[in-house]
Image 1: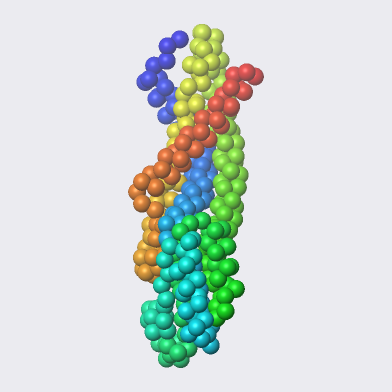
Image 2: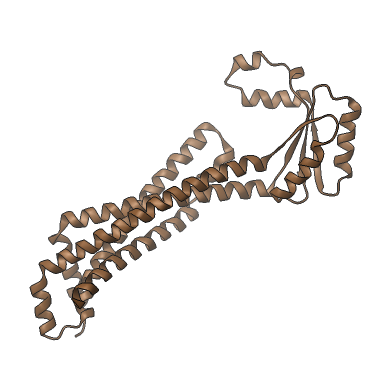
Length: 297
């Protein structure tokens, strides 16, 4: 039996209109589950961008003790110049350190009033040849042992902590998204089963006059597919809104380090496609299983 497009559209619309409350509940459940997945992807993309940013310009800072002698400082400088794994190094004196301090605490005059350049340490900003974080940390530990060195700070420490936090957040949201996705599929299953049961006589008549299972199945599967796609569209809109909020927060705070958490259009488009694909999958699987089990019963 040939399948006509107008028949599919009419039957799909009829099924949705016949069960509006179940259809709305299904769409909202899909939207919530995929919004959680989208938020997890948003966090992961931002962390990946931050890691790439540091990988392109990884450095560590060698802080010099306040009472270090000129000879000790020169010894550290010679070690940096002679090291084959150090690409470049810059000595930051107390005046330069105080200038940076003034920028960081520009809105805290009481802090600035209590600090003078003599209170701040000098340092070396070092860029290694190999930007791998493990290599950078190993190199930094070598300089930690030199006389006059107070401590060595690595950018990798902050990246690792941020990565651990983001991984935990992403895993939590992904697990919640999978649980909600399962709930969406079950709700989709029940929605289609309800629609089939409400039209069981029509379905039986169609089978008696020779309609194939696929002829009966397509409108119901299309109903589930549309519900999944509509829910995915809502989730994509929520992810876009979340990204805009994050972008505004970063810009207003003038905290450029986390610019990578405000995604561009191409990155948001990729996430939207993933969410639409997931929504279509949830709809197709939930409705397909429901129709197949009914027709086999």
